[in-house]
Picture 1 (cartoon, rainbow over the protein chains, first blue to last red):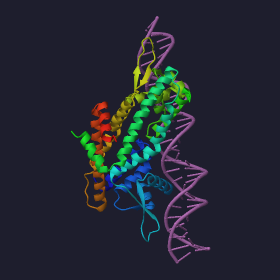
Picture 2: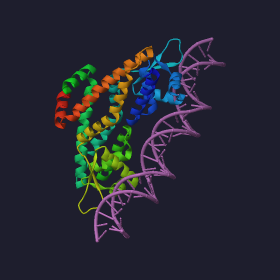
Picture 3: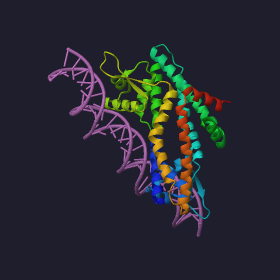
Picture 4: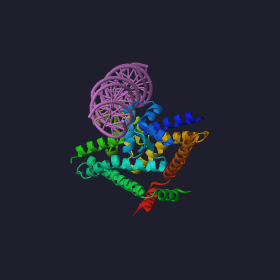
Length: 167
Length: 167
DNA sequence: TTGTATTTTCAATAATTAATGAAAATAACG
DNA sequence: CGTTATTTTCATTAATTATTGAAAATACAA
């Protein structure tokens, strides 16, 4: 396979995977492009490579920066901005977990916690409380686990996972 | 808070969470409704509770069954079908991981593996191979880890997670 | 300043995805 | 069988989400 084809395949694959996980395709494609690019790229290059509009490019680059996956680079003597991505996929994964935890999981945990404190005066209400408590307990535990993992060093985590699951 | 309100809050919250993770809202809402329901429900009840059409209800119930999260129950003397959900959230999580691995991760791993074998005759191609190899290695490891966890018993997994991360 | 390159915003439009509802298919019953 | 309850399908419609592109805002240099 030629490089150009492989590159397209990767950008496409990364975009498809992302949509299945609730991330928009363009955002994932920009991320993919920057991950495999040796140099940082400016907006026009990204637009040209992915055949997208300026507005679209700008918005999704901003989002990637918000997610902590892409960074701005200022080249001396250059007026426009250049962008580059974190290329270590472990760090990418850690960052995604961290952000999703903060943005999506934390609010849900708060709601669940509230919902455990209703009257259980009917079979429906009793079952409800039982299920919600179970979800709340497990989710809180899983969230705390993720939190601990994020605090730990990457190597420590990797080492321990290997110990835990090694054959 | 009253039961009726708590119930609506939960169904709504579960639906919102799901959309952020690439699952459609109705599917998550049906799942939520069945999880908190003491009895199995028929299609008409689900339609009425969630205010959705028959077609929508039917399609999403089918999908939930495909995902292994909801099951059919036949009541003797009853012609129509009743549905109930797995209520143990650990089992739900395990099932979701299992299915996503099969449907989404496995195909991506196959593509990544292909992409590692291109000529590295330019700086771009060299960087590409480097990044793809890293992703492929880490993803394969994570996938294998998930596979091992799925094979293990739930209690075993829980116990070991506690040991690993307990303060 | 003033002009110019660059970035950002956002209303309009396009594309995608989900939901409806009625018709067709299926299954159960007498 | 024929009848009726129930489920499934799917073309149409609705809702949602993403993209465009041009105008406005901003940043920089002279």
